[in-house]
Length: 148
Image: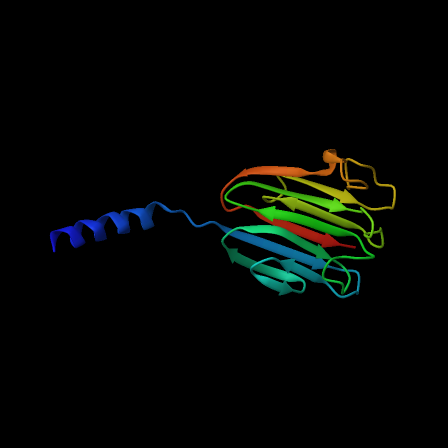
């Protein structure tokens, strides 16, 4: 009996030490087009603000109805307890069709692409345009994405 009591205390201490991250995702689309926000493991959504419990790895948002952003500009992001990152992608089959911008952690860092030639430090045109990627450190990161 004492063994189960000690085991229960150890288990409760372990649960208390595990930190669960929570991330705010705010997507605004002023383009008048459908919005698709794909959050692997959490679902597919439209524009709006939501809080996601747990990490988001490989999220993608775009101002078009294709959930993978084919044929339109897209913002890709991962929000994790540690290092979170985001970028605007124009790597084919993505293409410039609307202005896109994002900011991580209430404007701590971000990027804007407002024309098809906004530059490799604002958007990925090819897979090694690493200058376009933005990162923040810490738990409970947030992202605000705006189209048009």
